[in-house]
Length: 168
Image (cartoon, rainbow, N blue to C red; front, side):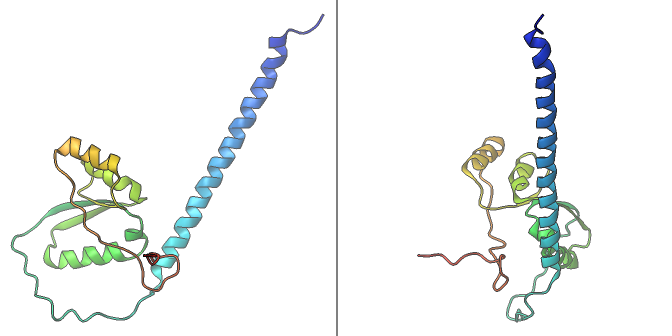
């Protein structure tokens, strides 16, 4: 008597599903390992001093705070702020005038910045230029447009960290 088709296909389907799961886990683990390696390289590059020239800022007007600021400033987004020391420099400079402010950083990727703002989890979002969909979402929630300020546009002489020269 011939075996029933379902009886034979059952173990084969189970084996195929198990193999697909193992392959998916392997691909997922490979992706995670690549991300960890990238994070390690970026952090190492951020620790290295690449630019030693000091700017003469003596001609700028002196800053004097008009009011005392306290609380926590929540910054989400661009990992380069905390992978390198830029975020720390910002904190230190701000605390000179506002020592009562704490900083909370969530900076795995620029892609979390805008959702952090419109979900009210972030006060500042460091990101690339806002997309049309992100703009619409923000406007629908708050009934106004976000304020965009260019903060970081590249590096002068560090390979891989500078913006390409426009071809126009």
